[in-house]
Image (cartoon, rainbow, N blue to C red):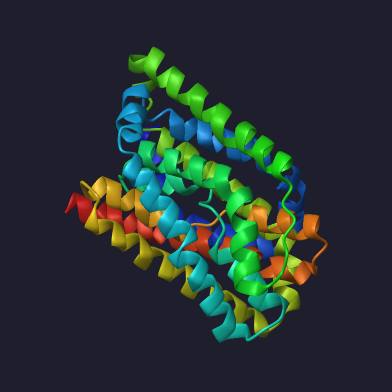
Length: 309
C-alpha cells in the first residue's frame, strides 16, 4: 500500500496532464462532477488538515506579520500583475478585465496540498489561505474598480458561507482529530499526500470538463489566453520569492510561493454572474485554473526534490 500511494504522489505531474487531456476529450465526465466541487474541496481541506495539529496553528498565529505580508503580496503586486498582463495580452475589453480579476483573486483552496507535497509549512499555508479568502469580498471590489473602472457586486453571504463549509469547518475538524488522536492519525501520514493528490485530480477533471467547450471554442486564440495565464502564474512564484526577506526558513518560503501563485478561480465566475457583467470576463479564470493545476505539481516536485538533495 505504501508503494501504491508513493506512485500516485511521485507521478502527480503525469497524472495531472492525463486528467486535463481527459477532461478536454470527454467533457461529460467533468460535467458530472461539477456539482460535487464544494464537497470535494472540503474533503481535500480535511485531508490536508490531518497533517498538522493545534500547536502548529498556534505557532502560526503568533506571527501575525506573516499574514500581513501575505495580504500585501496577494492583493498588491499580484493585482498589478493581473492588470499589466491583461493590457499586454488583450489590450482592453472583457478578457483584459478578466485577467485583471484573476490577478487579485485570493489563494486557491488547494494551495496547502501543494505545500504539503513540496514539504513546506502546511499550517501556515492553511491559515494564510483562510484569511485571504475571508477578506476577498471586501477587498476585490475596490481593487477592481480602481484598476478597471468597473463596479463589481460581490455576494458576500455566499462567499462567506462557502468559506465556512469548504475551509473553516473541515480544517477545524482535521486539526482537532490530529491533536486528539495524534498517534492514530500520524500512522497514516504516508497516505495523506496521495489521498490529497487523488482529490486534486478529481477536482481538475471537474474544472476542465465544464470549461472544455469554452477553451476549445477559442481555437488558436486559446493559446494566447493560456500563455497570459501561464505568465501570471509564473509572476506569482516570483512575487512569492519576496518572502525570502522575512521567511524564517525554507518551509515558510514554500508556503508563500503557493499562496501567491495559486488563485481561487471559482470566485471569479461568482463575482461576474452576481454583477451582471459579460460572461467572457470569467474566461481568463477558467484558463488560469487549468494552467495552475498543471504547473503546481511541477513546482512542488522540484521543491521537494531540491530539499531531498
